[in-house]
Image 1 (cartoon, one colour):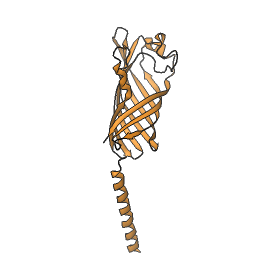
Image 2 (tube, rainbow, N blue to C red; image 1 turned 90 degrees about the vertical axis):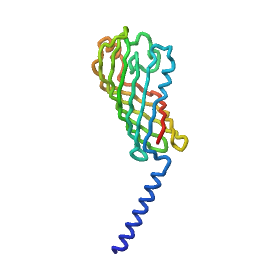
Image 3 (spheres, rainbow, N blue to C red; image 1 turned 120 degrees about the vertical axis):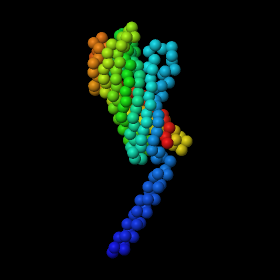
Image 4 (spheres, rainbow, N blue to C red; image 1 turned 90 degrees about the horizontal axis):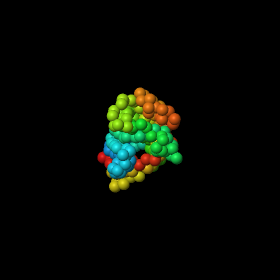
Length: 206
C-alpha cells in the first residue's frame, strides 16, 4: 500500500512539475509589463490652450494567468467639470471653470481576464488637485478619489510582447475635497461620474 501511495505521489509530482514548466514556458504568461494610454496623443495639439497635458505610466505584475495588478501614475489638466456628459454642454464656454485643475496621482489597478482577451478592471486613483485661477495663480489644493471601472479586450502581438487594449469605462469620484467656491458653483451642477469613456491602452510585456 505504501509502495502504491509513494508511486502515486511521484506521478502526481511529475505531472505538477510538467504543468508548471509548461505554464512558465507559455508565451502568454509574461510576468511584467509597462504601458500607457493613447490619450497622450491629445498633447500633440499644442495650439489648444486647454490641451490636457496628459501623462500616464503603468507598471504591472501578473499574479496568475488571469489576474494582473498594476500601479498607474497619471497627470492631466482639465477646465470643465469631469461629469459633463457628451452633448451640447460638453466643453461649452458657459460651463468652463474660472481657471483649470491640474491633477497628479497614483492608482492601484486590478485586472481580471474572463475569456481569452476579454477583461474587466477597477482602478482606484489618489489624485492631488491643484486649482489654478484665470490669472494662472495657484489658489489651493484638494484631494480626489478617482475610480475607473473598465471593460475591454486585449489584443496581443509579436508573441505577446506587445499589446493594445480598446475599452470603455465608467469613471466615478466619490471623494472630492477642498474645491474652491468659484469652481464648486459649476462643479455642483453635474454628477460625480461619467459614463462610457472610451480608452485605448498599450504596453510591452517582459
